[in-house]
Image (cartoon, rainbow, N blue to C red; front, side, top):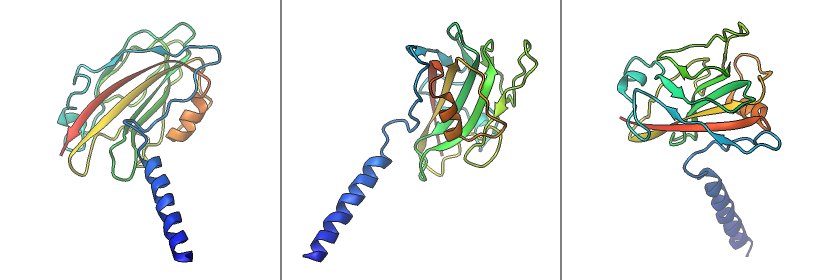
Length: 193
């Protein structure tokens, strides 16, 4: 009887663990919007690849490993800064963070190919890079061990400049953004090895 109860508990625990692993099609759950705000939509695009299309080799670990150019429409009134997260929810070890940028200028409408940081001409401040899953403060391109993976670029319009220092990780960024999101946009690209 004791053996049977142990097996049932083990099966239940395994089932719960597996349910938590399948966080749906994308792993990052967006933080709460700004109080009283309805989250608007930003259109995020890249001239390098279409939404849902293959990310060119140039922007991967098999190529030059530089960030692709990105562009977006105007964020809503009240936007004080922007944040960007690029991640791979299909990575074998769980969601892999490829690129984290925050405190991008509210007036920015694009990121150039290979960008490292963005200077705000109004304030003279520079955007900040967060720590990716490789432990680096930079873009790390798609580099799946095998098969096709999806890569999500998510842009957030925020009603504040974030008080995060250089090198915040994704969890710290998401926590800091909670209650400050005015709008967000998403672009997904794929890469296969």
